[in-house]
Length: 339
Image (tube, rainbow, N blue to C red; front, side, top):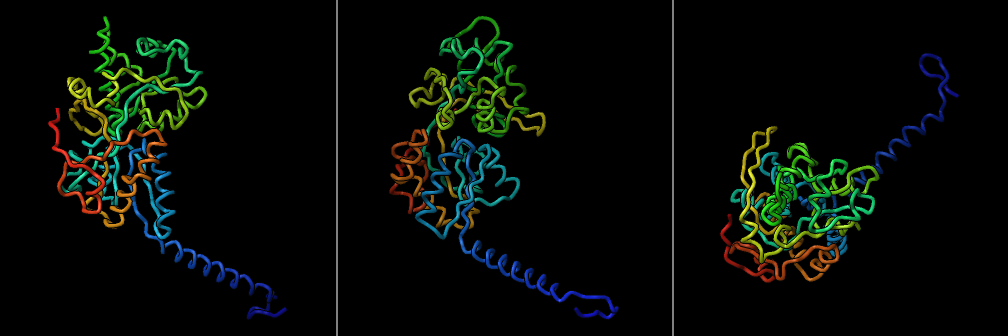
């Protein structure tokens, strides 16, 4: 034992503590160096793409071990707002409505888009949902209107599934022509004010799965099947998933007025089509194009199909400015008139 300048004992064994700290610091520095060696590709995705794109991520990273895909899911509208309002940089953005790219990102943040999959709105539930044994395509709105039944839909200001759902209710009024209170008003009351609903449809699935959560949720068919939930497939005229019914879908529209943000806009019915692009602010545009090309490749499309997505065959673009690396994977068509 030695003495310090105050003549108090000092244990020589304490010298091992600084050494341990130095070793720990060296380890952290080396670990940080290894982590930074991978190129990070930031991908904003619609929440409904979480499961299929998780499998896309695994497959792409297996082919590109020096790349890390950083996937950030949220409602498609929120994905776009992160870019336009929060200056958040994305290398790729994939949304559940191609019009999100058309209306929110062009021309400053996007110069092209590719339509790669379709979907449809329906009702997810379990055997424990109240009234499930009696539920049919002809009486679902009666079952869901019962006072003891809990129903939810997504926030239409954050997630396209929210406004697709409201449009589905509007189409249901045309299709069923019920007496008395409209289906749209009944479901709106059941789900509460649009701005107060869950921010995205992925949250709704967990509530349906949770014992004592909710009985029914309006979600995409792919999501319900991915979660092994029962799914009531609605009539083609109202589910917004049949390209042959586009003229029918465009007969309805909704006015969205968010009291929290003051946002006001109109949304017309249309077929649900998912789209993808590389924003103009992408940090790694060439790598992002490779990632998109993988999604559009036979292997990527097989993954999407396995996750119950209905892929467009072949993928479609309306733009002449699609990068050369992608032109052989898509077919170009004239842009349709939108309502």
